[in-house]
Amino acid sequence: MSTRLRRAVAADVPALERLRPAGGQEGLVGVFADWPEETRDPAFLHVIEHGGAPVGFFRIDPAFQDRDPRLPEGAHGLRGLLIDAAVQGRGIARAAFTVLPGHLRACHGLAEVFLSVERPNTRAIRLYEATGWVSAGLPDFEGRSGPELVLRRDLAP
Ligand SMILES: CC(C)(COP(=O)(O)OP(=O)(O)OC[C@H]1O[C@@H](n2cnc3c(N)ncnc32)[C@H](O)[C@@H]1OP(=O)(O)O)[C@@H](O)C(=O)NCCC(=O)NCCS
Image (cartoon, rainbow, N blue to C red; front, side):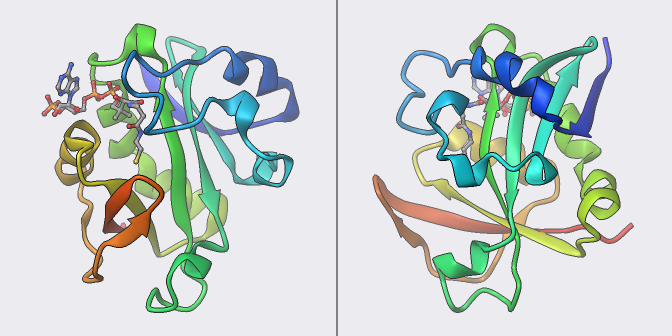
């Protein structure tokens, strides 16, 4: 079955609200229903589809630079990544992140994107390192649950 990325539409919301983290991951990422209204703009929300069904999502934060003034001017960030517990460990995130650069260039015209990930989240860090993310060269962010590694993905073709 194939994995693809697409920008969300308002009609995706009920399906996205059904997606859940696995046991023990609740502290790593929020469920979609808990996202504040201002973070739900479909223009910045992306759906991960597998076999034609939404199985995951993330958003692009155009104000990511607010997290740290040392980020480049206008830095965008990838936030809130979740793959539904029922289909984790099948290579879906890896497939989605393989096509991520072209998708973000097409949707947002970005040349680079950033993210931060909690240090203990080794599963996500392995995913990012395997799909071309590298250190952003910044000290860890001080997140709500502790230090967060800051990564950068060059989106050039
Ligand atoms: C992190 C997450 C997105 C990975 O999605 P996924 O579709 O399960 O990942 P994949 O199956 O594509 O695997 C990607 C890598 O994750 C690791 N991984 C996947 N399943 C794993 C498992 N059961 N145990 C340990 N590592 C695993 C592997 O390193 C894998 O790389 P590989 O292909 O070299 O083996 C998913 O686990 C998730 O939604 N986690 C909760 C939310 C979260 O942590 N978001 C990131 C916040 S920064």
